[in-house]
Image (cartoon, rainbow, N blue to C red):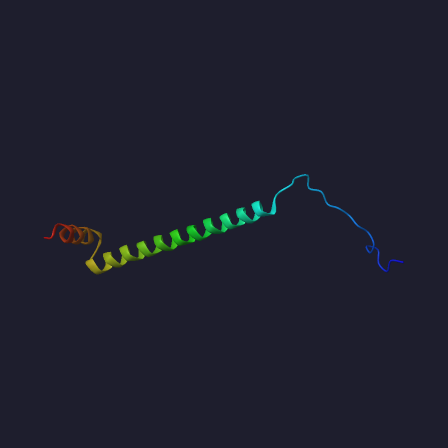
Length: 76
């Protein structure tokens, strides 16, 4: 004799689509890899922006930064 309403009742849920478990795992791994690469790209972009701003502050402004860069590259 069942002690609760749901005891002894078996149901099957059907979604209408069959998907291989390995395909699901591969999709999740791919999503994780894309997220990790996006985060790395954002971190690199933030580092580049910080370096450019720091260079402009040290050199005295954006024009002085460009002049200093050209003089360093040309060896002047």
